[in-house]
Image (cartoon, rainbow, N blue to C red):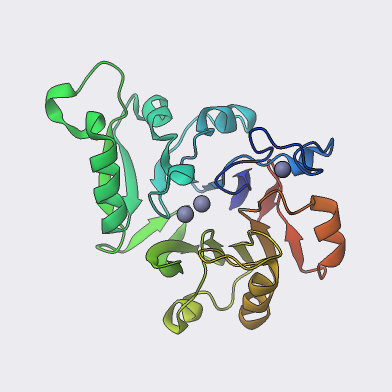
Length: 251
Ligand SMILES: [Zn+2]
Ligand SMILES: [Zn+2]
Ligand SMILES: [Zn+2]
């Protein structure tokens, strides 16, 4: 299984519009962060987790030519609003899209033009909405386990696929969810910034979760412009790295 980070930034993306801070104006390409998503290949499958607003640019940059399924973590705009670009991947067959029930409802309400039958045709994605908790799902040669995570007062979904875990927007992990994330080779976890935040883990909080779950390797994602890539990398233990856009890892 190969996981490629299509984006590793928080909801604003980095650089933030109109910001001239040292990270937003940095010449280090690792400080440019598009909105968070990953691409996963394994067996016959080519999966996306989330479709950020930059999806078109992300799939072109990573030379992704086919997508066989999409998993959504939640319906916030920074994870969802590239959905229209799934058109090209559903040209020959409808594309299955998996999410929790609340996210599916939000998707069909927000993007009514995709799902209202009278408007079908004329360049819209053909998507099959599937409740991820309603069936045992195997993708990329592995069982997919939805992991409930708290994102502020919202309950959203992370994923475990084989020995890979992906938790982006999280401020609290219940015990039952921690159990689902034991024994991982790679954990990707959101670490927004150094200071605490009401709906996201800080760097220290994410490190504490990593210490408790002890994956072989962990990567930070969903980082804001308070974080300089090199500075953070140097401060972290060897088994934890800040991810960056375009990074590919084999699991
Ligand atoms: Zn987000
Ligand atoms: Zn900035
Ligand atoms: Zn969010």
